[in-house]
Image 1 (cartoon, rainbow, N blue to C red):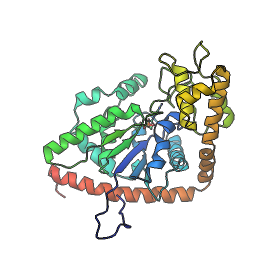
Image 2 (image 1 turned 180 degrees about the vertical axis):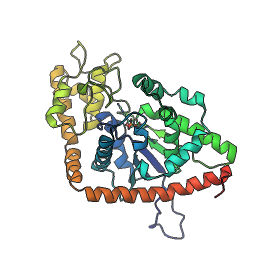
Image 3 (image 1 turned 30 degrees about the vertical axis):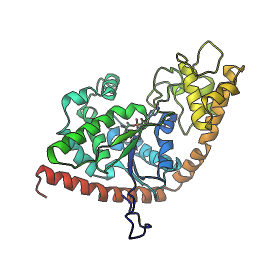
Image 4 (image 1 turned 90 degrees about the horizontal axis):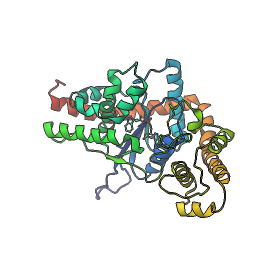
Length: 342
Ligand code: TYM
């Protein structure tokens, strides 16, 4: 993706592996999105060639207000940079700016089976939730996601656990295409963090934390104020015991411990020790305070970037240009193999 220009000519430069991931600009970015995915994207830039996208084309599979979608896309892009994605190190772009995504998605639709798409749990969940708008885009959403990934010769896709099934489908599509037309796509692997891969709702810890939850106390938004974050954690549903230990059946406490561990770096053992003999009130306050503190620099950087729209525009235009150059090569290769006249 980016040339390794510093290696001496005589030695073959070791090729960096390629990372691709994306996030939808719907509503607000939650602590789940952050801990499960986005916070890991920045550190990966040092070791890998990374491309990250604000996937606004995926977002319209559910009805969106145009003005809000436009604003949320810019905000999501600014938030991506505020979370540590450096547009000089990585390719950071808005999906609809790079036409190859829709083009390859159409091709992949013709190599994806109805039965495969019917088995996707996200499709089942979303069609139950939006029963009045079960559109074809919602159904073929995973083919567009496969296109996003396969266009860049991606090795690894850093995501939360809920996206694993979509990546497995992308692998199947890639293998099927390769089988029919000889080796074309690299077969990607999901890259799921050990901690934070599934952050649960604060009001119902048996459910995934989700920005589309009707109860705003169920999720923490990255841009929530310090007070709001602390308040939400104080209200978090736990259990009737008073023991901060990680144990099966203690969903609420397990979730809070995972969050606390993710933002402080403390092990579960250390956390159990720290709160030994102390009540849940103390623990919840500590988690809320640690999260609010951890997110402070992100909030501050976000505010600074939103004041510099010209810079943001320059970054996403530049990102789109780089993404198009790479992905067009892959699309041409695919078109050639299919027998399209070039
Ligand atoms: P999206 O926008 O729903 O979520 C973005 C990322 O956040 C992760 N995530 C979570 N992780 C832990 N706990 C949670 N409660 C939680 N909620 C969300 C998601 O796993 C995801 O990594 N289809 C994707 C976007 C996409 C994409 C791609 C991802 C489109 N094309 C190509 C990777 C590669 C989605 O809807 O993510």
